[in-house]
Length: 115
Length: 68
Length: 223
Image (cartoon, rainbow over the protein chains, first blue to last red):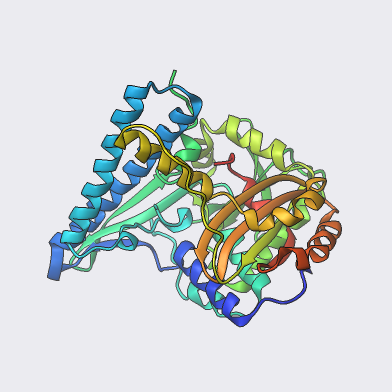
């Protein structure tokens, strides 16, 4: 296998490793388990993850429609406002449970992370 | 039926070989996605094994159908 | 009880013996929903160790010598049996056939872009009401996530070699972006020469290259 010279630096290697840890679901069998100490937070995390997933789906489709020119100006404004509010809502509720954006995720084994 | 495990998989990231890291990236993050799984549980007890087809994750790649 | 471990989708059944897989199991070819799949029957799910990952990569490289198009499947993909395989692939034939056409006779080079700070994302003037501006801003952000202007100095030289690109910004210094380039099999050396020749022009950003690889990153349609 060919390599591009020069070899990568140690810092760069660390950075790549960290990125892969983030992305490649390398945990044991992915689990969601409600922490009995804080069931509410566990449930909130799962629910918000799924909502965020749907929000991203909706956003992608809206952008696709925008680029395809199949949204009227009124529709663009209405969808944009709705997405903006949805994003703010997820952020606010997450914040109330002490959840950061990075916390909203779900490991799915071979499929990697949901978000 | 038991779900596949990935015990000790993190070891593979302990390498100075960037080509090996790219191998990990290619095999674990890319390629055709067929199914995923997650175990749902309470109080540390696994209760429900959920298996998902690619529908859920590869959302923008699967929902190719444009609105009329 | 064994399960079916999926390695790749192929443009056709290989003309020669498929050999053995990562668990030393005999590889076999399954026709499912008009597609050809390379599978092995395994008792245990393979663990992602260096040895096994290299072995899986080796299977794909070996098949590429006998088959025009090899579309790698994500590591760890198990289904119960051949029927379950057909069900999993059901309805995806058009996208998968398209992907097979895309990677036929091709391989992949992986480029990482390194630097202390990412180039600033362009912020265009946005018109309209708050919702319109929000959506336009999200569209810009989405487009920016796939742009790698750091490579502009070398794009001219790469144009003749690169069939398709998949790019992803990380913007977590020093790792700024990852770019996968689809090239015709056998042009890897020329690709690396082009990158090497452009290293000075690419400053302040550094670039590292690995490959050629099987076309792992080209299984999906472009985002």
